[in-house]
Length: 359
Image (tube, rainbow, N blue to C red; front, side, top):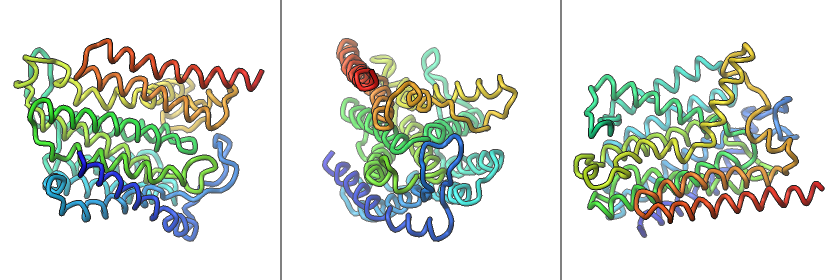
């Protein structure tokens, strides 16, 4: 645990220090978010925050490769994840600067998922009526779909200062806790890609947040949101590779199911926003990728919440689902219920404060 905490702190510190440098270069090369009708920010703001995240991740890998435990995690899988991350950040940089069309971005995302497949990072089994070993082609298709859905779910929620970075940080904490506790409880290796990636993921989000909180000095842009989505999806996929479903399922179903269900649980709010947006646009006869200002955070703002309150509410809603689901795999159900109630009451207090202020 100590080495993973060191990894988290290193990635956070590096991201915090690198971000201002990247901001200067983004302004220099014109990677700037101008003011549009659906936007919340009121001044042109630099993008390319994902470049700072990627650089912090790369340097963190180099530094922690010498640690006794974490260094063992940097192997073939980590190399594939790094190459895929590099590809998705380059795609995002181009989009942040030139605003690529939706099909080009989708093709780039599929290409990135293909890099993962080349390094053997894919879904191998599903816990259906026991355990079903998937044919390679089905496992590869499912892997690509998971990567695409998670990437775009994070991308959709990146519409407010500090929102996506905070939501993914909360999701990463839940993921890291699950991966580490699973290794402790069932004797799996604690030196694996899931723990390493989630520790770095949490770190780069926390290091970026001070620059991204309202009023944001820099946006993560698609280079950042797609990178965070990729790392979160990869954490889930590599975790399934570490789990022996035959050893666990007979004793307890939760740890067998959760490696695949957890990314959808921790990102339940972004997924809901994604589904509502797609259905709303199709119903209106528009492209599913057509932008609008009817996302969940827009609705919370229109309800009278401030920017800070809206971000905090979404944080708490994310935690309401992410942490109880993780707890449920290792503790009695009532502990998970109490955990959920804590966050529900907390979000209720925030919204109640809004009513007093606006009354």
